[in-house]
Amino acid sequence: DVKVTQSSRYLVKRTGEKVFLECVQDMDHENMFWYRQDPGLGLRLIYFSYDVKMKEKGDIPEGYSVSREKKERFSLILESASTNQTSMYLCASSTRGGAGGNTIYFGEGSWLTVV
Amino acid sequence: AQKITQTQPGMFVQEKEAVTLDCTYDTSDQSYGLFWYKQPSSGEMIFLIYQGSYDEQNATEGRYSLNFQKARKSANLVISASQLGDSAMYFCAMRGANTDKLIFGTGTRLQVFP
Image 1 (cartoon, chains in turn purple, cyan):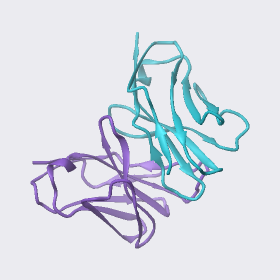
Image 2 (cartoon, chains in turn green, brown; image 1 turned 60 degrees about the vertical axis):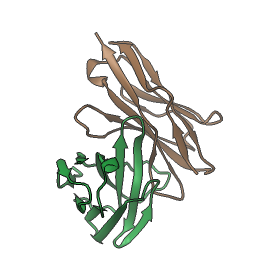
Image 3 (tube, helix red, strand yellow; image 1 turned 120 degrees about the vertical axis):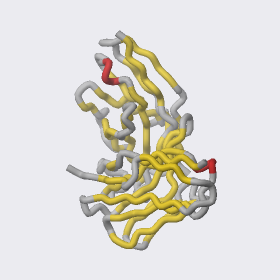
Image 4 (cartoon, each protein chain N blue to C red; image 1 turned 90 degrees about the horizontal axis):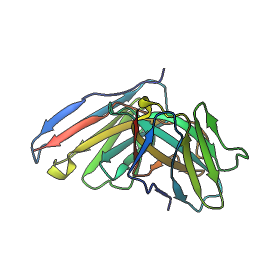
């Protein structure tokens, strides 16, 4: 079974703190993703990585950065957390596939509250 | 740019009835894939069904089928014989041929009542 593991399920951080959300996948997938999910807005892509040290901005990269030093690990960094970053964060991974039917596998999500 | 639109924020259906969840998309790619995911209250994302843009037949997976109308750019999910366990958020998503990014719609919350 493919496993995508997010290190923290629930976090509470203070405004201005630096926050790290870690994600590890065990299927040697090339692609890894960070999404943010908010009610009424669906899932919005923050960043995408297609290889080690390679990344692309998604639709809402402002206020976030990412790191992929090893193939299995993809970290999302909030340099200075703000209350409008309170949300659920979903990590995902997949093989390369373009329009093909290879599915994307998700972690369980990390609920971040910034106070 | 690619876009997915789900116009139904919420839907109700009685147990054992069929329900259709709407999804329209916009893309300039000739080749693309369409996906549906289910998200129960537990938060996990469960893959349901995939349709390739060049597939001749509509995709089916058990009680799920995808009503693909390419000219209308719609990819509606049909759930037959609804069950109480089908109550969840449902997301439509798309990926183009030249990218591995999966773009999601805003979702539809389905509630199945006895």
